[in-house]
Length: 517
Image 1 (cartoon, one colour):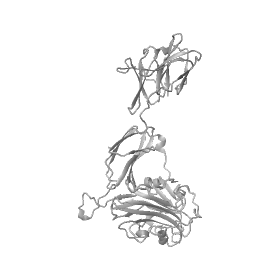
Image 2: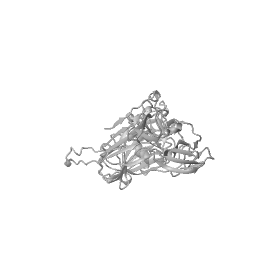
Image 3: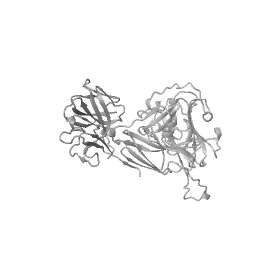
């Protein structure tokens, strides 16, 4: 399905705009991991970050500086944003002495300025991978020295027996080797094909003196359904001066099965995958302001709750079919969220949908003298007017009248039902009605205010007693008050339009339309 039934207009300025590399700060670390690093359908829990919040950033438009990663997360030993704004502080950024014992052991030197991201994930496939790039301001002057800034991706869990904390293995390795990635292992002299030099800062808006080509961190032989823990950490070595960065590919943290369970025999050891980004079964149709969601996804996990995040601050429970209508135009990112009973959460992003037209509001119509108008008219509406002399059982369109207001003189008779019908480009429509008082065509000897009224209506001829009858839009009398002078209490009336029949002590009757809110 996946149809978008709307037109998209591009302006000349949008077509000509140029992307610009940027790293910005992040206020919500949990959402950053879920939205910027994880692919669809990854169940995670216990997301945490060690370091200053400024050490975690949001990368955009990396292609404009040939980084090899266009968007994603950034971990830095300094302020993450300095890689795009040039405000690097050569003498260090932090006074903390936080350290990771595994990184300290790998570099062999004292470490500083630790930035560390941790979370648990459920293996929904037997393999996991993600993309990364490492860069540093230590390049190229300090290659081969003690200032060997380093990072690591440590994974531990069932079936893993490595040399690091909790039996973890390190996935941040030079491709095809067991050598960790650092300043001293990838540079212009060592593994040079994996290195990009930017020591003269020829790339505009990119203040990283050297950086690697995009590489992948991967692990196999995971036990499907089991929980694993990953630590992603970077640190300065020997001193806190000059920053380093590790760029994590946007939504590149993926899981998959190395064999197809449906096609491979069980004796080959294949494990059946659970839901991952390739197993979800979601369809959608967008028509103007309404989105229809079809969800046939199945998860081999104990999912206790499933709902849609509609992107406008609202959520709806996920069923096989759901229909949702937006009330305000805008761009909305819709996600399916699934939660397990033990606190793991997975998100599946359907897409970002531009909602340009929505269901029109109900028209409010009123009469002022001989003029009938739609008080809340929107220029995007198409207007039609109809009349009925039998209370709405039959009605006739007033052909040629498509304006939001018109003069009823000579067109309708006293007590006629008049209807305003509106629609917009989405073919949505709404109708309102009122009873026209033709006697209002003659100028009244009084006026009423305020319009619309809340609790009371005031008459301008304050000294003259009156009998007032109020009729609703169906022609039914809903109020009768005698000896009214300057004030009529309308607090008992429901919101809507009414025609007041006002009779003075001489028997003269006049009519006026009022709106009660």
